[in-house]
Length: 217
Image 1: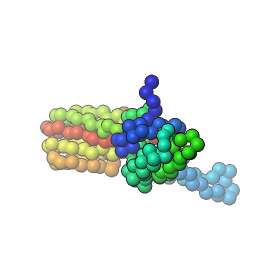
Image 2: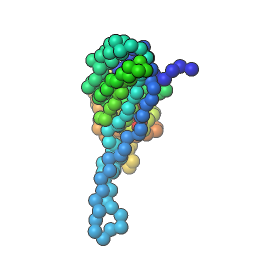
Image 3: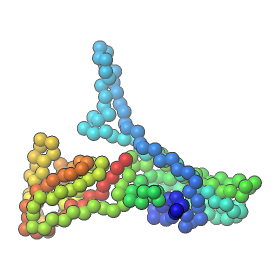
Image 4: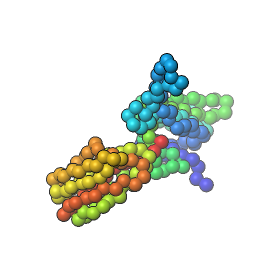
C-alpha cells in the first residue's frame, strides 16, 4: 500500500524526504449570524442571507516527520520553509488526488536530539472553504441543441466560448433567461450552475464550449 502523502503546489512531501504522520482536515463551519427579536420564540437567522449558506475559511493541520541527524533536518526544514512558508499553496492529499484546497501555509519545525526525529507542522487558517477539482470541466456542443452541464456542490459560473453568434436559453427556479451574443468569450452572472444537472438550450451554427471548475466542501 502506498504511504500517505501530500502535494504542495505539485511537489510531493515524500519526494522531499518527509513522512506524513497525521492530518486534521475538518469541514469548514458556516458563517452564522442571528438576531434575537423580543416577542419571538425563534431568532432571525442570516446564515443564508444571500440565498445560500456561506462558510468560514477552512483550517487544517498537517504533521510531517523525518529521522536523521540535525544537519539533514535543518537542510530539509529550510528548504520547506523557503518554498512554502507564508505562501498561498495548492494542497492535495494522496487519498483524494482529484481535489485540491488553497490556503496560506505557516510552518513550524522542531527537532528532538534524543530520538533524532525531526517534525514539520504545517497549518492553515485562511483556506478557501471549498476544495476544487484538479481538472477543469469542459463541455462542447456543435451546431446547437440542449446541453447538460453537471456540477458538484459548489455554485459556479461557467466561461462560455462561442465561435459564432449564439443564443442561450436557460431557467433558474421560475426565472427564464435568454442571451444572444456574438463570437467571443463570455460570462453571465445569471448563468450560475447549481448542484447536479443544469440544462441549457444552445442555438448556433458554430461550436460553443462551457468551461468551469467544480468544487465541494
